[in-house]
Length: 320
Image 1 (tube, helix red, strand yellow):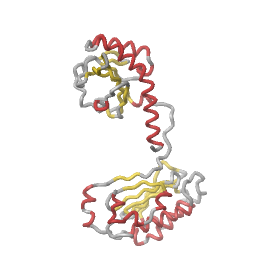
Image 2 (spheres, rainbow, N blue to C red):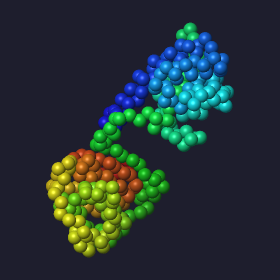
Image 3 (tube, rainbow, N blue to C red):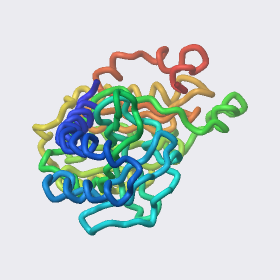
Image 4 (tube, rainbow, N blue to C red):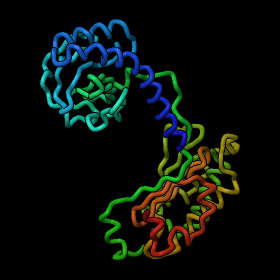
């Protein structure tokens, strides 16, 4: 499990811990009045008044095994009866109902408000048998904590592209772009921009002959340069800067990555690199191939792979 997934799991687990006791309390109280909307609503209101975490909920309600809402919705704004009897079986959370205790749905968009929401559910039992569920809806914004965002996802991610492009892959062949004609010069310029002139993230669009650059001193704005601009003294536009101390990629590795881009661009007439990028701060390389397959890979893993890995067996790896 990577840092990103671990952070999500930890925060959802913490939320479930907060919700377990109050929802369990409700579950025990409503058994005796199950199916009596007004009496159930009163219990919900009592719980809202005694528990801070539920007070932040958008609504509390109950539904039966078939997904029929059998109580009014209750929230901090008061009781709402309009959804009594509503069929909830098509809701995003219905298929993750707990068999015991509490469960938490994935986040979803409320079709009425457009807000990102999440639903906590607690099973309700009578004499050991499940008779229904208590549900608490939350707007994710209301659950914001002071946690920092998780760190970089330095894992290898692969994404398949447009099936129509993959299906006609062997009907096409690479055509030299204007960048291909001067590729050695372009790569030398990009290397200097990264190593000596403050660019921390550079993307080369080989097929469309342009580059996109992000400057360490101004990371919120990107610059796009067509190949003629790159060759026409672009270096003068970017003053010299020391190589960032935070860089996860060495200057030597920058050159190696760019050389590998050139190899993958020219290694095959059918399977070839359309675009490649390098971010020296998080140390990630991104690749997009002619089959529209994309890869996001740590720099050290990328450099560890030879060209045969990427285009071996008619490009099966590049397209995965």
